[in-house]
Image (tube, rainbow, N blue to C red; front, side):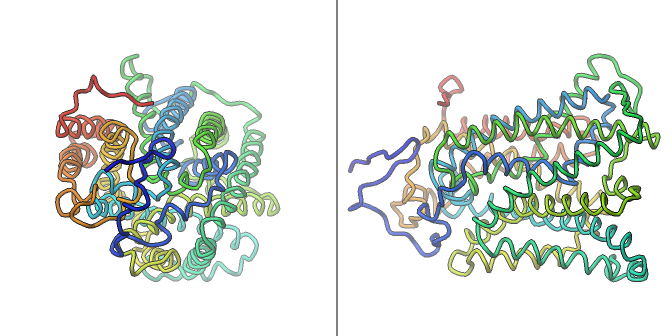
Length: 490
Protein backbone atom coordinates (compact mmCIF):
# COMPACT_ATOMS: atom_id res chain seq x y z
CA UNK A 1 0.00 0.00 0.00
CA UNK A 2 1.31 3.48 -0.87
CA UNK A 3 0.19 6.91 0.13
CA UNK A 4 0.49 10.27 -1.54
CA UNK A 5 1.03 13.61 0.09
CA UNK A 6 -1.20 16.55 -0.81
CA UNK A 7 0.01 19.82 0.65
CA UNK A 8 2.45 20.20 3.52
CA UNK A 9 1.72 18.14 6.57
CA UNK A 10 -1.24 16.13 5.28
CA UNK A 11 -1.09 12.53 4.09
CA UNK A 12 -3.98 11.52 1.86
CA UNK A 13 -4.73 7.90 1.01
CA UNK A 14 -5.69 7.01 -2.58
CA UNK A 15 -9.46 7.24 -3.09
CA UNK A 16 -9.84 3.49 -3.59
CA UNK A 17 -8.33 2.84 -0.16
CA UNK A 18 -10.14 5.60 1.71
CA UNK A 19 -11.37 4.24 5.07
CA UNK A 20 -15.01 4.50 6.03
CA UNK A 21 -16.02 7.45 8.18
CA UNK A 22 -17.52 5.93 11.30
CA UNK A 23 -20.74 7.63 12.55
CA UNK A 24 -19.36 7.65 16.09
CA UNK A 25 -16.57 9.91 14.86
CA UNK A 26 -18.07 11.76 11.92
CA UNK A 27 -20.25 14.82 11.60
CA UNK A 28 -20.38 17.07 8.54
CA UNK A 29 -19.29 20.05 10.65
CA UNK A 30 -16.14 18.18 11.74
CA UNK A 31 -15.14 17.17 8.21
CA UNK A 32 -12.17 18.85 6.47
CA UNK A 33 -14.38 19.79 3.51
CA UNK A 34 -16.46 22.02 5.82
CA UNK A 35 -13.50 24.42 6.18
CA UNK A 36 -14.54 27.70 4.53
CA UNK A 37 -11.20 29.10 3.35
CA UNK A 38 -12.42 32.61 4.23
CA UNK A 39 -10.29 33.44 7.30
CA UNK A 40 -7.55 35.52 5.70
CA UNK A 41 -4.81 37.68 7.21
CA UNK A 42 -7.13 40.53 8.18
CA UNK A 43 -9.57 38.09 9.81
CA UNK A 44 -6.86 36.43 11.93
CA UNK A 45 -5.62 39.93 12.82
CA UNK A 46 -9.13 40.93 13.93
CA UNK A 47 -9.44 37.62 15.84
CA UNK A 48 -6.44 38.58 17.93
CA UNK A 49 -7.76 42.09 18.46
CA UNK A 50 -11.01 40.61 19.76
CA UNK A 51 -9.05 38.18 21.92
CA UNK A 52 -6.84 40.78 23.61
CA UNK A 53 -9.36 43.56 24.09
CA UNK A 54 -11.70 42.63 26.91
CA UNK A 55 -12.54 43.36 30.52
CA UNK A 56 -10.73 40.16 31.46
CA UNK A 57 -7.68 41.10 29.40
CA UNK A 58 -7.44 44.49 31.09
CA UNK A 59 -7.82 42.96 34.54
CA UNK A 60 -5.19 40.31 33.75
CA UNK A 61 -2.71 42.93 32.58
CA UNK A 62 -3.22 45.30 35.52
CA UNK A 63 -3.07 42.32 37.87
CA UNK A 64 0.67 42.17 37.18
CA UNK A 65 1.05 45.06 39.62
CA UNK A 66 0.56 42.48 42.38
CA UNK A 67 3.91 40.95 41.38
CA UNK A 68 5.62 44.17 42.42
CA UNK A 69 6.37 45.24 38.85
CA UNK A 70 6.72 48.86 37.85
CA UNK A 71 4.84 50.30 34.88
CA UNK A 72 7.66 49.86 32.38
CA UNK A 73 8.40 46.33 33.66
CA UNK A 74 4.76 45.41 33.13
CA UNK A 75 4.91 46.61 29.53
CA UNK A 76 8.05 44.57 28.90
CA UNK A 77 6.54 41.43 30.46
CA UNK A 78 3.27 41.73 28.54
CA UNK A 79 5.12 42.37 25.28
CA UNK A 80 7.50 39.41 25.70
CA UNK A 81 4.46 37.27 26.50
CA UNK A 82 2.94 38.39 23.20
CA UNK A 83 6.10 37.30 21.36
CA UNK A 84 5.99 33.82 22.95
CA UNK A 85 2.32 33.58 22.05
CA UNK A 86 3.22 34.43 18.46
CA UNK A 87 5.46 31.37 18.14
CA UNK A 88 2.98 29.10 19.95
CA UNK A 89 0.12 30.37 17.78
CA UNK A 90 2.11 29.62 14.64
CA UNK A 91 2.71 26.03 15.77
CA UNK A 92 -0.95 25.42 16.58
CA UNK A 93 -2.49 27.57 13.86
CA UNK A 94 -0.44 26.30 10.94
CA UNK A 95 -1.09 22.68 11.92
CA UNK A 96 -4.82 23.43 11.93
CA UNK A 97 -4.64 25.20 8.58
CA UNK A 98 -2.96 22.21 6.99
CA UNK A 99 -5.24 19.47 8.31
CA UNK A 100 -8.50 21.49 7.96
CA UNK A 101 -10.26 19.96 10.98
CA UNK A 102 -11.24 21.52 14.34
CA UNK A 103 -9.09 21.03 17.41
CA UNK A 104 -10.80 17.95 18.97
CA UNK A 105 -10.54 16.08 15.65
CA UNK A 106 -6.92 17.14 15.22
CA UNK A 107 -6.22 15.79 18.72
CA UNK A 108 -7.30 12.31 17.57
CA UNK A 109 -3.92 11.87 15.86
CA UNK A 110 -2.12 12.13 19.21
CA UNK A 111 -4.65 10.86 21.78
CA UNK A 112 -6.52 8.35 19.60
CA UNK A 113 -9.90 8.66 17.92
CA UNK A 114 -11.68 8.12 21.26
CA UNK A 115 -8.95 9.41 23.54
CA UNK A 116 -9.31 12.87 21.95
CA UNK A 117 -12.46 13.26 24.03
CA UNK A 118 -10.16 13.79 27.03
CA UNK A 119 -8.61 17.08 25.80
CA UNK A 120 -11.99 18.07 24.32
CA UNK A 121 -13.81 17.76 27.66
CA UNK A 122 -10.99 19.45 29.61
CA UNK A 123 -10.92 22.40 27.23
CA UNK A 124 -14.73 22.62 27.28
CA UNK A 125 -14.87 22.82 31.09
CA UNK A 126 -12.52 25.80 31.17
CA UNK A 127 -14.24 27.50 28.22
CA UNK A 128 -17.79 27.17 29.59
CA UNK A 129 -16.76 28.55 32.99
CA UNK A 130 -15.02 31.56 31.48
CA UNK A 131 -17.79 32.07 28.92
CA UNK A 132 -20.25 32.50 31.76
CA UNK A 133 -17.89 34.75 33.73
CA UNK A 134 -17.12 37.01 30.75
CA UNK A 135 -20.84 37.28 29.95
CA UNK A 136 -21.50 38.29 33.54
CA UNK A 137 -18.72 40.91 33.50
CA UNK A 138 -20.05 42.42 30.27
CA UNK A 139 -23.60 42.45 31.70
CA UNK A 140 -22.38 44.56 34.63
CA UNK A 141 -21.38 47.23 32.10
CA UNK A 142 -24.90 47.09 30.69
CA UNK A 143 -26.32 47.49 34.19
CA UNK A 144 -24.15 50.55 34.75
CA UNK A 145 -25.41 52.18 31.56
CA UNK A 146 -29.05 51.44 32.41
CA UNK A 147 -28.71 52.87 35.91
CA UNK A 148 -27.09 56.03 34.50
CA UNK A 149 -29.77 56.52 31.85
CA UNK A 150 -32.79 55.20 33.80
CA UNK A 151 -32.27 55.93 37.51
CA UNK A 152 -35.68 54.40 38.27
CA UNK A 153 -34.19 51.00 37.39
CA UNK A 154 -32.29 51.10 40.67
CA UNK A 155 -35.18 49.31 42.36
CA UNK A 156 -34.53 46.25 40.16
CA UNK A 157 -30.94 46.13 41.38
CA UNK A 158 -31.89 45.69 45.02
CA UNK A 159 -33.62 42.29 44.86
CA UNK A 160 -31.65 39.05 44.83
CA UNK A 161 -32.14 35.59 43.31
CA UNK A 162 -29.33 33.02 43.36
CA UNK A 163 -26.87 35.80 44.08
CA UNK A 164 -27.93 38.17 41.30
CA UNK A 165 -30.40 41.06 41.24
CA UNK A 166 -33.39 41.19 38.91
CA UNK A 167 -31.66 43.84 36.79
CA UNK A 168 -28.54 41.70 36.75
CA UNK A 169 -30.55 38.71 35.51
CA UNK A 170 -32.16 40.79 32.77
CA UNK A 171 -28.81 42.14 31.51
CA UNK A 172 -27.12 38.73 31.77
CA UNK A 173 -29.88 36.83 29.94
CA UNK A 174 -30.22 39.46 27.19
CA UNK A 175 -26.47 39.40 26.51
CA UNK A 176 -26.46 35.57 26.59
CA UNK A 177 -29.27 35.48 24.03
CA UNK A 178 -27.53 37.97 21.72
CA UNK A 179 -24.29 35.97 21.80
CA UNK A 180 -26.18 32.76 21.09
CA UNK A 181 -27.90 34.35 18.09
CA UNK A 182 -24.52 35.16 16.57
CA UNK A 183 -23.21 31.64 17.09
CA UNK A 184 -26.34 30.03 15.65
CA UNK A 185 -25.65 31.83 12.37
CA UNK A 186 -22.43 29.81 12.00
CA UNK A 187 -18.71 30.43 11.74
CA UNK A 188 -19.07 33.09 9.05
CA UNK A 189 -21.15 35.20 11.44
CA UNK A 190 -18.46 34.65 14.07
CA UNK A 191 -15.85 35.88 11.58
CA UNK A 192 -17.85 39.01 10.77
CA UNK A 193 -18.39 39.77 14.46
CA UNK A 194 -14.67 39.36 15.10
CA UNK A 195 -13.86 41.71 12.21
CA UNK A 196 -16.07 44.36 13.80
CA UNK A 197 -15.51 43.71 17.50
CA UNK A 198 -11.70 43.83 17.34
CA UNK A 199 -11.42 47.41 16.06
CA UNK A 200 -14.50 48.54 18.07
CA UNK A 201 -12.81 48.14 21.42
CA UNK A 202 -9.97 50.43 20.35
CA UNK A 203 -12.58 53.20 20.24
CA UNK A 204 -13.43 52.56 23.89
CA UNK A 205 -9.81 52.07 24.99
CA UNK A 206 -8.57 55.26 23.31
CA UNK A 207 -11.54 57.25 24.63
CA UNK A 208 -10.93 55.89 28.14
CA UNK A 209 -7.20 56.63 27.87
CA UNK A 210 -7.80 60.22 26.72
CA UNK A 211 -10.38 60.79 29.47
CA UNK A 212 -8.26 59.46 32.34
CA UNK A 213 -5.02 61.05 31.01
CA UNK A 214 -6.79 64.39 30.83
CA UNK A 215 -7.85 64.02 34.46
CA UNK A 216 -4.26 63.05 35.35
CA UNK A 217 -2.90 66.20 33.69
CA UNK A 218 -1.31 64.06 30.97
CA UNK A 219 1.28 62.79 33.42
CA UNK A 220 2.10 59.18 34.28
CA UNK A 221 4.90 57.63 36.32
CA UNK A 222 6.27 54.54 34.59
CA UNK A 223 8.39 53.74 37.65
CA UNK A 224 5.26 53.35 39.84
CA UNK A 225 5.04 50.04 41.71
CA UNK A 226 2.67 48.78 44.38
CA UNK A 227 5.55 47.15 46.26
CA UNK A 228 9.08 48.23 47.19
CA UNK A 229 11.58 47.47 44.44
CA UNK A 230 13.21 44.08 44.99
CA UNK A 231 16.81 43.12 44.20
CA UNK A 232 17.60 42.65 40.49
CA UNK A 233 17.26 38.87 40.63
CA UNK A 234 13.83 39.05 42.25
CA UNK A 235 12.72 41.69 39.74
CA UNK A 236 13.80 39.47 36.87
CA UNK A 237 11.84 36.52 38.26
CA UNK A 238 8.80 38.74 38.75
CA UNK A 239 9.02 39.92 35.14
CA UNK A 240 9.32 36.33 33.91
CA UNK A 241 6.26 35.47 36.01
CA UNK A 242 4.43 38.30 34.26
CA UNK A 243 5.51 36.93 30.87
CA UNK A 244 4.11 33.47 31.51
CA UNK A 245 0.95 34.68 33.23
CA UNK A 246 0.25 36.52 29.98
CA UNK A 247 0.85 33.32 28.00
CA UNK A 248 -1.27 31.28 30.43
CA UNK A 249 -4.18 33.70 29.93
CA UNK A 250 -4.30 32.55 26.29
CA UNK A 251 -3.38 28.90 26.94
CA UNK A 252 -6.87 27.61 26.10
CA UNK A 253 -7.39 29.64 22.90
CA UNK A 254 -3.92 28.74 21.65
CA UNK A 255 -4.74 25.06 22.18
CA UNK A 256 -7.91 25.15 20.05
CA UNK A 257 -6.65 27.74 17.53
CA UNK A 258 -7.23 25.14 14.80
CA UNK A 259 -10.99 25.70 15.19
CA UNK A 260 -10.42 28.96 13.32
CA UNK A 261 -7.24 28.57 11.26
CA UNK A 262 -8.67 25.47 9.57
CA UNK A 263 -10.69 28.07 7.62
CA UNK A 264 -7.58 29.96 6.43
CA UNK A 265 -6.68 29.51 2.74
CA UNK A 266 -2.88 29.56 3.27
CA UNK A 267 -0.22 29.23 5.96
CA UNK A 268 0.93 32.73 5.01
CA UNK A 269 -2.41 34.14 6.10
CA UNK A 270 -2.01 32.53 9.52
CA UNK A 271 1.57 33.73 10.00
CA UNK A 272 0.83 37.30 8.89
CA UNK A 273 -2.39 37.46 10.91
CA UNK A 274 -0.54 36.26 14.01
CA UNK A 275 2.27 38.76 13.46
CA UNK A 276 -0.08 41.72 13.13
CA UNK A 277 -2.44 40.56 15.85
CA UNK A 278 0.23 39.70 18.43
CA UNK A 279 3.44 41.55 17.62
CA UNK A 280 1.71 44.80 16.62
CA UNK A 281 -1.77 44.89 18.13
CA UNK A 282 -0.89 42.81 21.20
CA UNK A 283 2.03 45.02 22.18
CA UNK A 284 0.00 48.20 21.50
CA UNK A 285 -2.80 46.94 23.75
CA UNK A 286 -0.27 46.20 26.50
CA UNK A 287 1.08 49.75 26.32
CA UNK A 288 -2.31 51.52 26.37
CA UNK A 289 -3.57 49.30 29.20
CA UNK A 290 -0.58 50.15 31.40
CA UNK A 291 -0.89 53.84 30.54
CA UNK A 292 -4.57 53.83 31.60
CA UNK A 293 -3.65 52.08 34.86
CA UNK A 294 -0.82 54.51 35.63
CA UNK A 295 -3.03 57.48 34.86
CA UNK A 296 -5.66 56.06 37.23
CA UNK A 297 -2.97 55.99 39.93
CA UNK A 298 -2.45 59.73 39.41
CA UNK A 299 -6.20 60.39 39.65
CA UNK A 300 -7.32 57.96 42.37
CA UNK A 301 -4.10 57.29 44.26
CA UNK A 302 -4.09 53.62 43.23
CA UNK A 303 -4.35 51.50 40.10
CA UNK A 304 -7.95 50.71 39.14
CA UNK A 305 -8.15 46.99 38.36
CA UNK A 306 -11.76 47.02 37.18
CA UNK A 307 -12.41 49.17 34.08
CA UNK A 308 -16.10 49.28 34.99
CA UNK A 309 -15.09 51.30 38.06
CA UNK A 310 -13.48 53.84 35.74
CA UNK A 311 -16.56 53.96 33.53
CA UNK A 312 -18.78 54.53 36.56
CA UNK A 313 -16.93 57.80 37.21
CA UNK A 314 -17.62 59.22 33.73
CA UNK A 315 -20.13 62.08 33.97
CA UNK A 316 -20.95 62.34 30.26
CA UNK A 317 -23.75 59.94 29.34
CA UNK A 318 -22.73 60.16 25.66
CA UNK A 319 -19.11 59.15 26.31
CA UNK A 320 -20.31 56.44 28.68
CA UNK A 321 -22.75 55.18 26.05
CA UNK A 322 -20.06 54.96 23.37
CA UNK A 323 -17.58 53.27 25.72
CA UNK A 324 -20.04 50.69 27.05
CA UNK A 325 -21.43 49.81 23.62
CA UNK A 326 -17.88 49.30 22.34
CA UNK A 327 -16.92 47.25 25.39
CA UNK A 328 -20.13 45.22 25.16
CA UNK A 329 -19.56 44.40 21.49
CA UNK A 330 -15.91 43.56 22.10
CA UNK A 331 -16.69 41.37 25.09
CA UNK A 332 -19.33 39.49 23.12
CA UNK A 333 -16.76 39.03 20.37
CA UNK A 334 -14.04 37.66 22.63
CA UNK A 335 -16.52 35.49 24.48
CA UNK A 336 -17.83 33.81 21.35
CA UNK A 337 -14.36 33.46 19.85
CA UNK A 338 -12.44 32.24 22.89
CA UNK A 339 -15.08 30.57 25.03
CA UNK A 340 -18.07 29.55 22.90
CA UNK A 341 -16.82 28.05 19.63
CA UNK A 342 -14.40 25.69 21.39
CA UNK A 343 -16.91 23.83 23.63
CA UNK A 344 -19.35 23.65 20.73
CA UNK A 345 -16.83 21.71 18.61
CA UNK A 346 -15.80 19.72 21.70
CA UNK A 347 -19.38 18.65 22.33
CA UNK A 348 -19.91 17.72 18.68
CA UNK A 349 -16.71 15.67 18.80
CA UNK A 350 -17.90 13.67 21.82
CA UNK A 351 -21.44 13.10 20.48
CA UNK A 352 -21.32 13.69 16.69
CA UNK A 353 -24.56 11.77 16.04
CA UNK A 354 -26.50 13.86 18.57
CA UNK A 355 -25.19 17.40 18.27
CA UNK A 356 -25.03 19.91 15.46
CA UNK A 357 -23.41 23.33 15.72
CA UNK A 358 -26.79 24.82 16.67
CA UNK A 359 -27.77 22.20 19.25
CA UNK A 360 -24.39 22.26 20.94
CA UNK A 361 -24.47 26.06 21.07
CA UNK A 362 -27.83 26.05 22.86
CA UNK A 363 -26.61 23.51 25.43
CA UNK A 364 -23.44 25.53 26.10
CA UNK A 365 -25.45 28.71 26.56
CA UNK A 366 -27.75 26.98 29.07
CA UNK A 367 -24.84 25.44 30.98
CA UNK A 368 -23.20 28.86 31.26
CA UNK A 369 -26.35 30.08 33.04
CA UNK A 370 -26.76 27.02 35.25
CA UNK A 371 -23.28 27.39 36.76
CA UNK A 372 -24.23 30.92 37.99
CA UNK A 373 -20.89 32.41 36.89
CA UNK A 374 -21.21 35.46 39.20
CA UNK A 375 -20.89 33.08 42.14
CA UNK A 376 -17.82 31.48 40.53
CA UNK A 377 -16.27 34.89 39.97
CA UNK A 378 -16.85 35.91 43.59
CA UNK A 379 -15.17 32.74 44.89
CA UNK A 380 -11.41 33.01 44.25
CA UNK A 381 -10.74 29.68 45.98
CA UNK A 382 -13.05 27.82 43.60
CA UNK A 383 -11.60 29.57 40.57
CA UNK A 384 -8.02 28.89 41.61
CA UNK A 385 -8.51 25.27 42.66
CA UNK A 386 -11.04 24.01 40.11
CA UNK A 387 -10.92 26.18 37.02
CA UNK A 388 -7.27 27.00 37.68
CA UNK A 389 -6.47 23.34 38.22
CA UNK A 390 -8.13 22.21 35.00
CA UNK A 391 -6.65 25.20 33.20
CA UNK A 392 -3.21 24.07 34.30
CA UNK A 393 -3.66 21.08 32.00
CA UNK A 394 -3.67 23.32 28.91
CA UNK A 395 0.15 23.38 28.90
CA UNK A 396 0.57 19.57 28.99
CA UNK A 397 -2.11 19.18 26.30
CA UNK A 398 -0.35 21.69 24.05
CA UNK A 399 2.98 19.95 24.59
CA UNK A 400 1.68 16.47 23.77
CA UNK A 401 -0.37 17.47 20.71
CA UNK A 402 2.29 19.69 19.14
CA UNK A 403 5.08 17.17 19.84
CA UNK A 404 3.04 14.40 18.27
CA UNK A 405 2.39 16.43 15.11
CA UNK A 406 5.77 18.06 14.57
CA UNK A 407 8.12 15.38 15.96
CA UNK A 408 6.45 11.97 16.17
CA UNK A 409 4.33 12.22 13.01
CA UNK A 410 6.76 14.59 11.27
CA UNK A 411 3.95 16.96 10.18
CA UNK A 412 2.06 14.22 8.36
CA UNK A 413 -1.54 13.42 9.26
CA UNK A 414 -3.79 10.96 7.44
CA UNK A 415 -6.93 13.07 7.61
CA UNK A 416 -9.37 10.32 6.64
CA UNK A 417 -8.02 8.03 9.35
CA UNK A 418 -9.11 10.61 11.92
CA UNK A 419 -12.65 9.32 11.28
CA UNK A 420 -11.74 5.60 11.10
CA UNK A 421 -12.74 3.40 14.07
CA UNK A 422 -11.92 0.06 12.44
CA UNK A 423 -9.24 -2.13 14.13
CA UNK A 424 -6.80 -1.27 11.36
CA UNK A 425 -7.31 2.48 11.79
CA UNK A 426 -4.09 4.44 12.04
CA UNK A 427 -5.21 6.40 15.09
CA UNK A 428 -7.19 3.71 16.87
CA UNK A 429 -4.11 2.64 18.86
CA UNK A 430 -5.38 0.56 21.82
CA UNK A 431 -9.20 0.51 21.58
CA UNK A 432 -9.24 4.13 20.47
CA UNK A 433 -6.75 5.48 23.04
CA UNK A 434 -3.05 6.31 22.71
CA UNK A 435 -1.72 5.27 26.13
CA UNK A 436 1.54 7.19 25.59
CA UNK A 437 -0.28 10.51 25.15
CA UNK A 438 -2.60 9.83 28.08
CA UNK A 439 0.34 8.87 30.30
CA UNK A 440 2.28 12.01 29.36
CA UNK A 441 -0.79 14.15 30.07
CA UNK A 442 -1.45 12.56 33.46
CA UNK A 443 2.18 12.70 34.58
CA UNK A 444 2.74 16.30 33.48
CA UNK A 445 -0.75 17.24 34.67
CA UNK A 446 -0.05 16.07 38.20
CA UNK A 447 2.95 18.40 38.26
CA UNK A 448 1.13 21.45 36.89
CA UNK A 449 -1.99 21.01 39.04
CA UNK A 450 0.20 20.69 42.13
CA UNK A 451 2.05 23.85 41.14
CA UNK A 452 -1.25 25.68 40.59
CA UNK A 453 -3.17 24.80 43.73
CA UNK A 454 -0.69 23.91 46.50
CA UNK A 455 -0.02 27.06 48.58
CA UNK A 456 3.57 26.07 49.29
CA UNK A 457 4.34 26.16 45.56
CA UNK A 458 2.71 29.52 44.92
CA UNK A 459 6.05 31.13 44.07
CA UNK A 460 6.31 29.03 40.90
CA UNK A 461 2.57 28.94 40.11
CA UNK A 462 2.92 31.60 37.36
CA UNK A 463 5.20 29.17 35.51
CA UNK A 464 2.67 26.32 35.35
CA UNK A 465 2.23 26.66 31.56
CA UNK A 466 5.91 26.33 30.55
CA UNK A 467 6.40 23.64 33.23
CA UNK A 468 3.48 21.73 31.75
CA UNK A 469 4.70 22.09 28.18
CA UNK A 470 8.31 21.11 28.91
CA UNK A 471 7.44 18.17 31.17
CA UNK A 472 4.82 16.75 28.78
CA UNK A 473 7.17 17.07 25.81
CA UNK A 474 10.00 15.31 27.68
CA UNK A 475 7.73 12.49 28.89
CA UNK A 476 6.07 11.98 25.50
CA UNK A 477 9.40 11.92 23.68
CA UNK A 478 10.75 9.40 26.19
CA UNK A 479 7.71 7.15 25.77
CA UNK A 480 8.16 7.28 21.99
CA UNK A 481 11.92 6.70 22.37
CA UNK A 482 12.81 9.88 20.46
CA UNK A 483 16.05 11.64 21.56
CA UNK A 484 15.81 15.43 21.90
CA UNK A 485 18.66 15.75 19.40
CA UNK A 486 16.38 14.43 16.65
CA UNK A 487 13.80 17.22 17.03
CA UNK A 488 13.40 19.41 13.96
CA UNK A 489 10.51 21.77 13.18
CA UNK A 490 10.27 23.15 9.68
